[in-house]
Length: 137
Image (cartoon, rainbow, N blue to C red; front, side, top):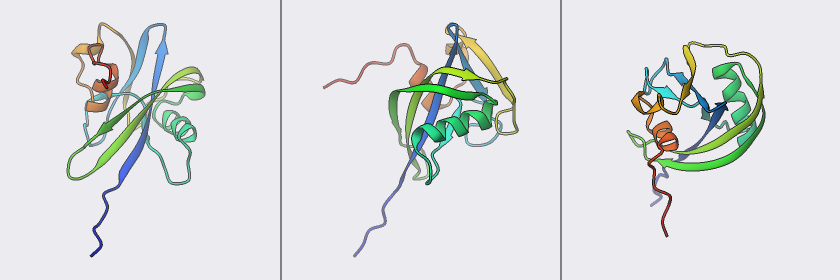
């Protein structure tokens, strides 16, 4: 008997820092509508991670990622059987002008002091939490 396999979605996110302020977008669609989130999204089948990051950041913010470095990864168990691996990139160079979309109708750079009071998606909360413990052996 063959068991069905649950797939885990790869998701890329970009940490865009502008002089100590982090770019977040407020989600306009479910899941987590209204929550603030790092720009990013699901990697499509034909894409490598860097290409997916460039596409998602462009779609959600209007910015062009010129250079980014992989920083962290987080397994999110999700709900209703969906699971994802979130891969965080630090965007070190970008061009363009911020542009909102129906998917992300609000974009703003926040200081580190403003972030703790925001309602964040679970994965952005994980990546941006200053009190997060490092992995242990």
